[in-house]
Image: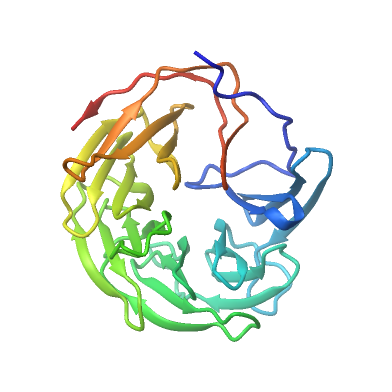
Length: 331
């Protein structure tokens, strides 16, 4: 078998990475032959800009802020780039609010404060779950279960909160928009929460709930939307594939022995990566059967001595550990 993966030069960051779901975001800037990386640690976001030849690096650290206050001690929950047709923004979510920056982190263009009670309560307040949807929307989840929809202009800082989606009753864990680029897919967005409930949405002037897929009292920590199929990773180590509009379960994969922390997919090839608390990263291949139009899951048995990067056209995946891949699928 030909060697599928190889180790590339490691990239040093300024500090450690917190043990959070989906704590890695990557943005490729093709015209400048650069790739941006970001990870969160406590109240700091570590950014690295790396040239594609691996020779040049630059670092930037962003701290949690509260409006006009220079710094804040509130923990950052997630940082992710949102790619819209007209602009790219870096979005940070924390215990106090939502910050939006220009893609290089140089200028903060928007701040949204969360509603925090005057007296401490048993339930923590935070924002988590970030997704860019269609032409002009950025959606962010909050601990109350609400999904905030922001209308983003093609330039400038006149970003507005246009809608609040109220279907979840537990804290939002992750969100994802349709990544295949297909205009035929009805669903635009999927949101997940701590109970495992999934909500599938269609964007527009008013977002429309297409389906609500019940959970099993197990947190859905990471979710993707690919060709109308919801791909959900759970605290049980399982990955489930649902038809987004109907909620039909296409496949259930016993992927990991412990909590899944992140999923990522190459939209043009259907290669799915799953990373979990068992220190393993696994590679899956999703295909759509022409006979049934159902999604099928296939895995490969691969020895990986040390895996640093997997390059797929237009996508970049970062993998943290070696593994000997075995899989079990239930169709």
